[in-house]
Image (cartoon, rainbow, N blue to C red; front, side):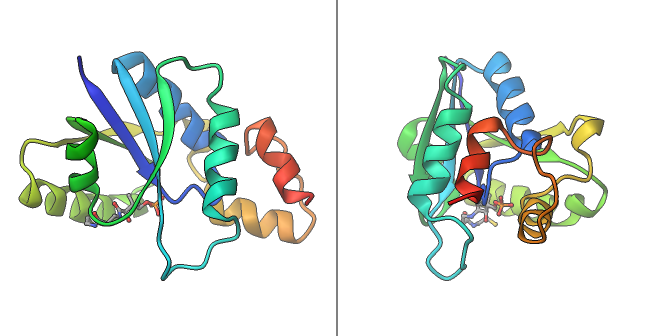
Length: 155
Ligand code: PNS
């Protein structure tokens, strides 16, 4: 049984994230979407809101669950028995930081493998920060986030 974890801030979860989660759900027996609790970083949505909007967006995926974590990702992965960390890769600009994080995690625990998924080209330039900015200026985000996320912006 291979368990994977998809970690992130998910502020908010986007269609790009969902695409990676859906593909991970086809590859691994169990996938945990893990939302980082980071008190030092201000976020548009509370931890509960972020968790809730993901849970509603992945309700059609029976082997996917949602959780929160703090501290080191590799420690959390070990705690829940996940052998794989899944990250989506968009443009080249993602590579530096992802390479650094994967190398650090590997140093911390070489038994946990990081797997990268190339983002679908439809979502290559999509990010949570772009969605937040568009929404703040009244732009249309309906094609960028899963349907359950929309109502959190109208609160
Ligand atoms: O969605 P994000 O903000 O790109 O996700 C980043 C995340 C949560 C994967 C990363 O910040 C993380 O793993 N934080 C936990 C702390 C940690 O383990 N740091 C060491 C590896 S760099």
